[in-house]
Length: 429
Image (cartoon, rainbow, N blue to C red; front, side, top):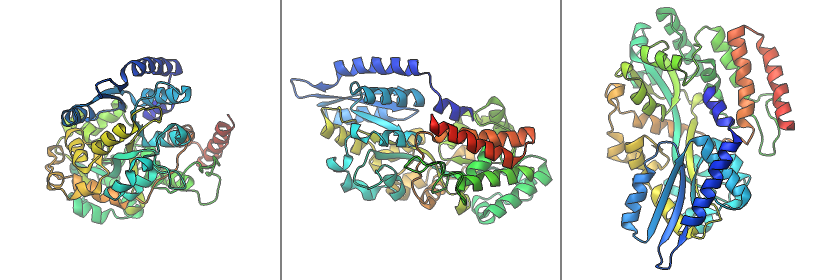
């Protein structure tokens, strides 16, 4: 929950200051010199290998200089939004995180339509659902080229599964836990035999169904959907309540010190995590090295969690040069490099057939080659999900209700109605 709240809440003054500094830097640095050289400002966030790839591109294209600036996720997006709103100071190229994408699609007039720059020619190299996520509703405007994705899978502890009498081979685990009902049965066995929860939190239980839903909190018209009969959010909410009542849900808040310690010590048996979680575990849970494996989830839980696009604000004077670099950066060959260097999982499906990708062994995961598991998961995902600007505030209202149910023992239906009421209030602001 804290990570989501950090993403949703940002000190505006800090973001504005960052934006104004960037504006000044851009005004001085971006442009084509008298000698025909071009300087492109590229705003990024998170851990990427784009600085190294930019240097590689500069060597191949000596007339192009790329200035890469990296910031925290929230700072990056708010500074970008501020610059776009001001109509001055945006970079030539920028990353957009998938959960922030709808916020910028609403301002697509501030971006280049990449279809006008030739993007249609490379569409077939990428997963269809990822590509369509970058389009507008009518499909004639593309705001960004696809970079990484976050296909979800089942991370599980070999020792706890073994103690519970469950299989430990990834293929056997996937065959056994092939439905929500089978997921519950496995959870009960873990609880009975080990005394430990199956999954870490009620938040992750909620996301089991939520992340794969075709519609969640809002429609593209801004209509609140969670009151409607059959809404997927209510289904996900009820499922989380059910798992909690079964006693197979832990009380660990993701990213908290307690959660990190539980990952290391084996205080819960499984996590529904995206491909990028693998990198965090390898770097921060060394005590549990060799004790985790990865298997595909039931198709009902197939979903994407995370990933980005690369866009070109239309303030740039160098749209063609910016697009040429962007197309090169997200090519299958370079997505393989980003995966090998930083664990950015490719959206270019042709990478999945490359031997360097398939043969990648993960010592942390007992020598398992986890890449094909996530590749299979990526191809099970149904499609793009509209989120909208109010996604995270409403998400927080519903998960706060679930936390009250779990920690305070309050009535689930009463908490749901209160969450709906608060969500309506958010839309009125």
